[in-house]
Length: 220
Image (cartoon, rainbow, N blue to C red; front, top):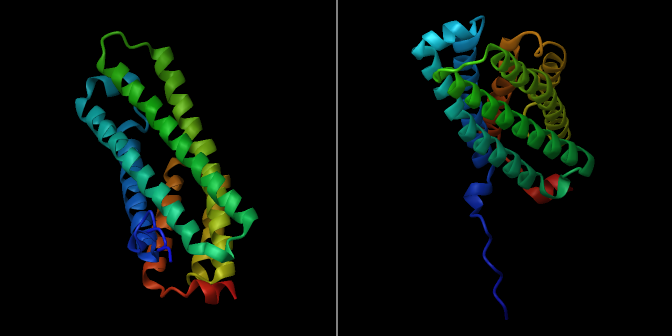
């Protein structure tokens, strides 16, 4: 008789609790990064940021949080897909995974561009035109494209959560409202972008507090 090969990842790292913890870590880190970034650069000219080392330090700290938030978000996606198991819907699973990865890619690209801008500000030959171009590119990536992908991600997760009854019904219904805000408002109101990590935090806490069902029962 052959013994089954051990799993690549221990069961505790693939549990509902693991997904909830990853979601909470992502939400807290991204909220902190966005708030620090908005406080550091909102309404400021390139000259003010260049002369204020405190603002540059705040931006660097925010950018250093982004990779860790991305790692937690990626783990959150993986564990949620693993938890769906046999009840996974191919359509919503594809939209869920694709929108989540696109959001993450745009978030990282925006962080890379912002990191380059901070390095330029610290130098002696800062070009205002390049600064304007880089800042506009970063804002477009995060506020327009990444937030739209976050809206699609929220819609797909809310639909799957509603169908599987994995969390209380008010959580996915609130997700639909959050997706609407991200689609219509997040591009103009930068503080509205905080509703996405805030909703992931609420979802993760709901997952943590809601008892899980056996996969076989869910599939039935």
